[in-house]
Length: 68
Image 1 (tube, rainbow, N blue to C red):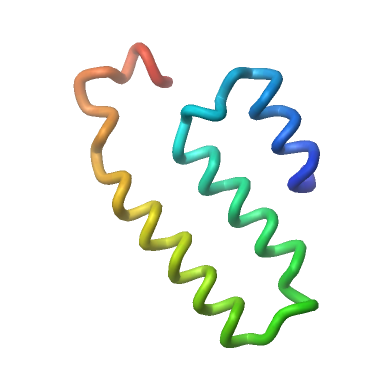
Image 2 (tube, rainbow, N blue to C red):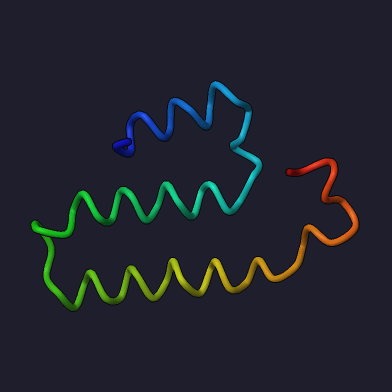
């Protein structure tokens, strides 16, 4: 699934508010650009995505039934 298809899926399933899926979309878009950007830019953007993922923490605790 490319980033366009993933974005359409997120819209169709009303998943825009699910931050872990937005991280997945960012990763897919970065992967698609990998050959056209420098290694340093790729590493910086990957580190940024990773940090955002780590910042999510355990936000879902107590609301599992609502978000999964």
